[in-house]
Length: 135
Image (cartoon, rainbow, N blue to C red; front, side):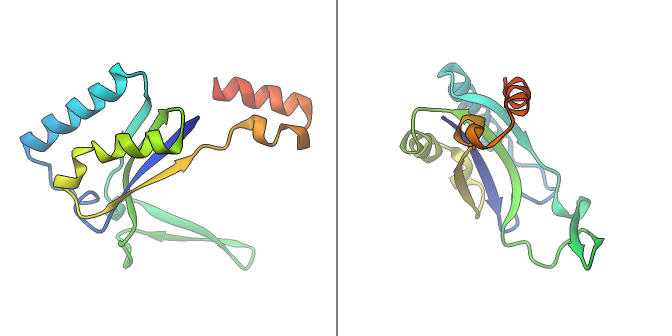
């Protein structure tokens, strides 16, 4: 099972201030532990929302709003993709994450939708194409 682990922040994670060396070392150790256990598939941090844009449809047109955004309660600061056996295992890994000592946000655990879960409703050629992308 793959899970996306989403780091949300009400400010600190999405700021442009560099974290202190102790926190960076703790996060490196955590990420190394994930990799050594064969759990870590990907990880990325994101620039602050002030550097981003929100794009949404409005009356048949696309409306673009550049950051910073007024509502930053649930900004995404970064994410991991983990391969684990269950949601409970993912939660146990999250509980080891040193972000709790640095940020004031939350971490969301979401299972990745696998192509096999909806393959019966799709054209076989498309299913094979998606399996190739996900590999």
